[in-house]
Length: 488
Image (cartoon, rainbow, N blue to C red):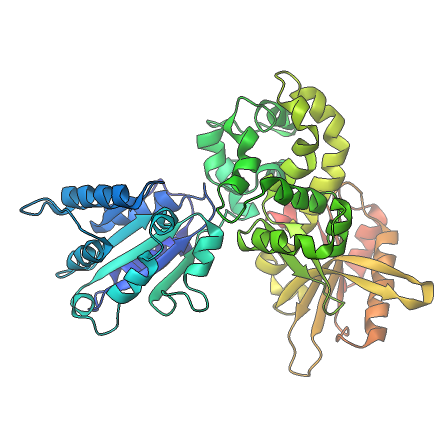
């Protein structure tokens, strides 16, 4: 299948769907496609159906009988049978889908499948039976059935553990947001400094620039503040309430206020479970379930500490949620009043720089090291890129490492390829390098990592002074990474 020219990126996703749909071998197959809303799943699957001549059904929130009736009518229009379909139950409906593929591979998409399953909890079991390995209706069919959904917690459980469909699916495809480089290209932003700022606010969700903002993108660094005021902080735009809606759309989130409080705690710099509990003045056990749900739906991530076993830090995975929790939620009452956005933004700029933009830049640096940097820079391909805390027993203190690049080793001890400090606002100098040298010596003394080839990285959004530039030229263990490198 040829990918539509108007589809941006999604090369990997399109190729996976092409292989799945074009498989000419007999036997109906099942695939699962998931991803948060607004990532372009429907656009992607609709394009697949159009390219291969398949059937698409978009479920809605409705009673089971109504959904089955809508499904019957939709399939009647597609298949044009001698008499209209009136399915008595979903067993009949699924067999009719299998019958579509008797002569050729036919893609069939059921979008927003969680709506159907919530109205009829037996539906996954019905599909399990329909796709039984030796069932004639399946073996004689080439239907390629794709179940799609945005309810991440539900879709994540669909193929897990003892779920009915475990072992039945031949494709499990996650449609993620665009990564920071692709997001800049999609938004048409060529200035790396502007790209970092914009991504820290809205992330890489494809629907935001065109559908939500009608093409209103920041025209340059001097327009960024005005753009934030007229779009994200403007109660007249759909993006204004998007942070709240992303939570409300998840069925497992039964107390949105508590979940938003957890996210606000993380946005305020509380990265541990005990820190979050203390911020909320609750016991750690009381927030275990909300944290787990937020992880399941992809809004919260737990990153293992690179240097301390069994330690981890929580980070908000969706930039718009981090912006909402850190900037908008504390000032929500004022923002809802028309004309207050500029005043709120002027008062929130320092908080944005320290609580949102700084941590976001650090994460982009880790993403760059893991997915974009030339492995030759580090002397090997990373297996892990993380942050961590290195204890300093002699000084009775500890040191944070923003970027730790680690590779596996045949000798038993993992190789610490590089450690780095990331500063968004500071022009970095010799003092930053000396700090990294001290940390490297502490890691070497601990003996857990092979530090014989550890590079020292200074990653800055505001450049480097002349002395550090000269040192980087003179030494082969010093790497300077600027904004141009992150987007090169």
